[in-house]
Image (tube, rainbow, N blue to C red; front, side, top):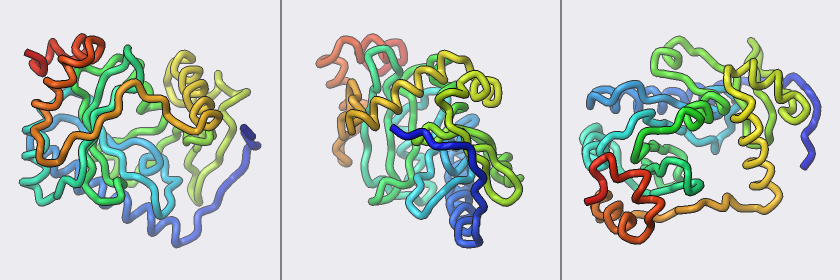
Length: 237
């Protein structure tokens, strides 16, 4: 992998327009979730940092577990269609999540943890850059790391990017995360590039006409490690 050098990237009007469009979509989704009583949903990744392109995902995440059926009901009552659903568990020790996609291209996505997130998992969002509803309204962009392992730091006319590798201490301090998080993400993203796949422990698509809780119950019976992570949240009988 080539990690590149520090450089400044200036956005043209087209890129600013894409960012405004993506952030408008994010604001609508966060507002819809909040209207259902969901506390503090966040947006993370390029929409939080600002370094978007036409195909950038609008990644919305819940930081606390919310009943999947109620979340899906909320989404549909707010006028959104659910195109697909996936249950993903990155490793045996990480928290499984439900991913709900609101468009056929899977660019609008809401993730719902099926159990309490580990502290390090919340830091993963900070590592990639995360903002809340009021940040979006104030047009705040935050620093974070992209999939190329470049630290993106917003500036008035675009951003400055710096390679994470070789600057791990600065990145941890700049983002307010632990060195453990920085090193974990470096290893995971480097492996993804090297091997060409995510290597997820669990990745199952939930049939769109199937109740998510019923599918979770089936997974609990099939996989004891999955069951151990979610059984305290009423998802396994």
